[in-house]
Length: 245
Image (tube, rainbow, N blue to C red):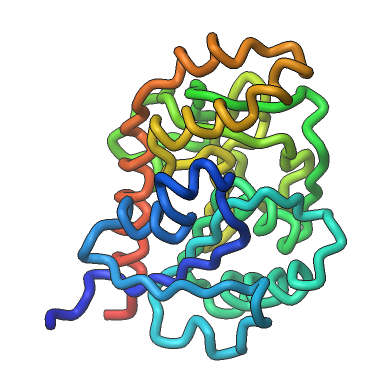
């Protein structure tokens, strides 16, 4: 068997909405499909047991998934996971990508602050706008200054870590993407397909109505967003380039 192009640890921080998971599988499955067969994936779950100090040994990159939880919830596994992520990024300089909850957890672990988004829930196929600071960012290679992505979240990185570069925003979130050293955080979901997001809109329809959003109209506006796949491909390409030669 040939050596994988990249060896990646996927840190699973939650489970999908049951109705979505029954059709589309778990978070790890979404990433394995999106990353493709050339990326060797090791899946770990810090909720089941604390990650060991050796968890990232022999790997080239880390991806931290989304979660139905908030990073500021009093969950016993969050603090130890933050410590492991700081080690990966600060001590090892390991290419790391945080997605949604993972984006927020990276920000918090590196000294930033996460709160309930005062602008409200952001859900659907959204427009992401790159800042000038994001021009030339490897994560955005091949993408324009504006692109669409899938999103569903209620929290936001209100204060990025000191020294972080905020690279993009959306109408409801001022920190859609940041970079700090070898760490990248994206608030949107590059691994989520239109059918997955449509499933989430269906599952959240009652809550959306309570918040004053028409779920049928939102459902109709969910469309494929191939830029998400491009972002993941860019991360893999960039992480490969960081390996010692």
